[in-house]
Every structure is written in structure tokens, then in C-alpha cells.
View 1 (tube, one colour):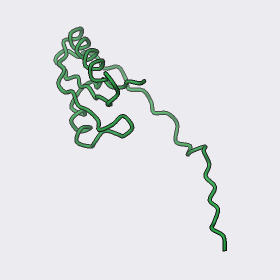
View 2: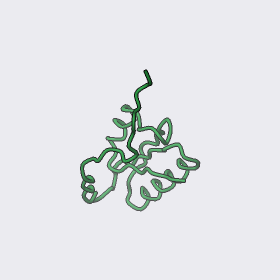
View 3: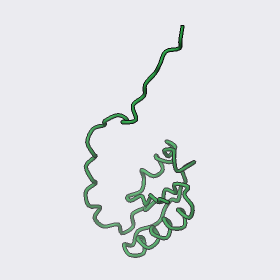
Length: 95
């Protein structure tokens, strides 16, 4: 008896449509801004610099700089909970 043949499709699954973009933030004066470092080279440096400039321009406060375990994995639930306290989260860096 020969082993069963399994055929896999490279097409992936079709998900629901894209999520709606967030609305305008409004004033950031005194509001917390957070950074989520995705682990890419120099991401923390770049994203923190962006968050600090945003804070200076808007009178906000950089309140948290957190890092994911790796760029390929989602952030841990405890990090997401900490980020939820921020009004704005600066993240994203690609090769």
C-alpha cells in the first residue's frame, strides 16, 4: 500500500476585507506615545527617534519603548496590554 498523497495550495486563505483606518487622533499634548520595536536592525533607533520628534512637535510624552521577540512573531499579550495605554504607537520597519 502506498502512502496517501497530500496536495497543498499556495494560494492561502481569503480573509475578510481590510480593516477601516483609525480616525484622526486630535491633540497629543500630554498624551503618551509608545514605540514597538520589531527587532529589525536599527528599528529601535529609528522608531524611537520618530516618536521623540513627534512628542516634541505635539507636546506628547514618549512613555514606553517595548520590543517583540522577533519580527516574524506577534507581540506578546502583556506588551500589547502596555501599548494599549498609549494614544499613539509608532511601529514598523522593513528591510
